[in-house]
Length: 260
Image (cartoon, one colour):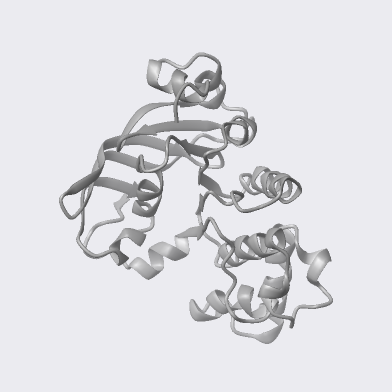
């Protein structure tokens, strides 16, 4: 069913009856879905429908927001990520995140990539740090463009390069899952195509979950697509089925541009 013929379709994330409130407002309502390893899963739907809130549930970024309450199960590796004994820092190493706008640290290109692996004691020797920085930048498709200016600020790069630097930073800690919250929305078409090609390569090693408002992008890159509306997940299917023969009228209307 998926377009990723090399995927094993093993379960990466299991979500059951997930509810989320911001104060009195319920942003997510009984979300249940299975996300599979080595695939790209796209979350689509109108603005404010809960896509980014759901994404932040997967690495507990919502913990940083006041008055948030979460109920239900988010399971990775057989453990509920919201269990009291789960270390949030260790979880965020396993579940990396790339945000809508590129956000390099105010450090050199080299140190943007090396910072987190050093903090997590993944590498310590100078030679190991150098090798990890190079491999991460290569995996992000950026090495050839920056190898002669590693000590220049990350903010000196173009927008598309900065986003690939943020992807290199995310994969440097060797995560299992990469979350991407509209990673190309602020980029030009050429940079967007570069990031999409990169995502297609990265899914061979990582599970990728991305939020997008671009229906054409979801159709191009995603193996599975989930349609959210007003805090509910209305439909979830392999992308080919979702875009050719959606099972619900709401999904069909959104995909065909009748609303949203």
